[in-house]
Image 1: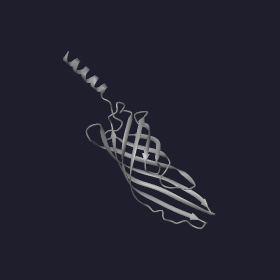
Image 2: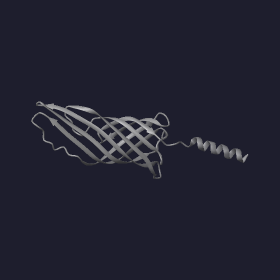
Image 3: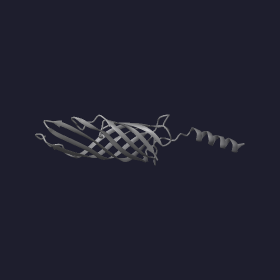
Image 4: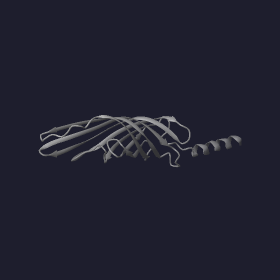
Length: 178
C-alpha cells in the first residue's frame, strides 16, 4: 500500500510540475521584422530585419533566469532631393543580457523578459549627384534596453514581440526553441 501511495504522490507531483519556456540551458533564436526606428531616415525605408540568439545561463533563484546572447539587425533609407540620390544603411551588432521572469501560471508557454544590449552601430552613407549633404553620420558604440515577450504555440515554435532600441522600436517575428 505504501508503494501505491508513493507512486501516486510522484505522479501528482510530476503532473503539477510545469516546464518553463525559458530555463537554464534553454536556447532561443528570434527572427524579426521591425516597425518604427530611432535611426533617422528620410524618404523610403527598407524593412528592418533582425536576428537574435540567447542562451539561459543562470537560474537566479526565485522565478527567473539570466540569459546571454547576440543580436544583428539591418535597415536603410533612400532619399531623392535636388537631383541627388542619398542612401543610408544601418547595421547593429550587439551582445545582450536579459532577465526572463518565470513566475506566471502559464509559464510553460509565455516568456516575459527585459534586458540590456551593448552594440556597435555601423552606419554607411552614400550619395550620387546633387549638391551633397553633410556626412556626419558616424558609427559607434551603443547601450540600450529592451522589453519583450514570446508565446510558444508548440514546444519549439512561437511568436515574439520586443520594444526597445535595435534597428527598430517594435520588432515582431518568430521564435525557435532548442
